[in-house]
Image (cartoon, rainbow over all chains, first blue to last red; front, side, top):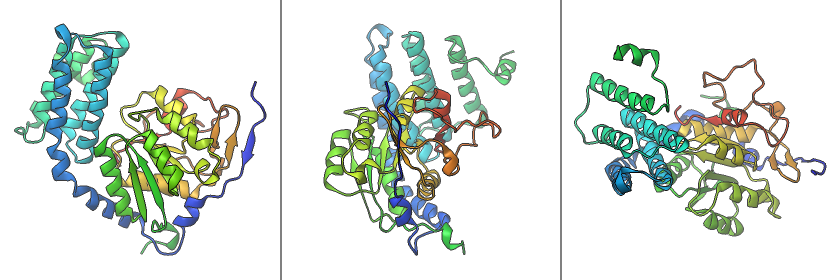
Length: 169
Length: 195
């Protein structure tokens, strides 16, 4: 049984410090931060293929083409890093593919599906969208994403949208 | 020139960033550097974070929801029940990667002030810190919840609340009556990392 709720007024120390005279405007702060983040680009973008390699290694180690729940969780964790890198440095296609990969892993985990082929297709798509790979045209990228959507639909993880259904017809 | 009240002075602020992902912590670190923080420390896991918090004084805690050695829920539980008021009432921004909603609900129920979805952008992080700065929220202490009051009558909800197609202004999604509220409300508190 819960006892009475105690309400404690708390001094907003962070607010007091931030409101001291001087400081930076939102625009100035965001611009300076963006410049600082940009200094990481070379190292971090260069790490994307390695991170993808780590994902591929987990999938490759799957026994008899069956992926265990532990492997799925490990892949979701690793893919989170790729999402951070692709999202921060604006590799939009890679970010979309990795997002779908995460959706797939979570969906397969929830449904108890362990088929490695669906995972392999997404990993190959990531390689195509990886920095350093030949750039895909808008049409090619669209086809690739559509293909991944069909995999999701096949496993009943996500239904095809109206546009995708039309494209299939 | 923007008005004076729109300027924030980070020069006296110290922060602790807890994240096992070196890329993510590196990016947050650079963002804080860009904001002009006096000092910030990176902890790669919850145990290190507890150690740093026990030694240094921080004004802000930024932590990933899933840590290598413990769940951030455990870290927040420790923070919110600490005997030192400076630690106990410290603003906490929780970063969520590809987190399942259940994990976010658990973290919210352990007293995080706000949530930012990865990848973290300078704009979103600035807005969340600014929101924490201008929002006066008392703490609620009960048997099963210690943390900032989640009724937003004291100020607007965190930035990003109105960016989702499912957010409807005419529904009071951010008025949470009980600490253990539903998943949909918690999900509504996550701000998109993309500006």
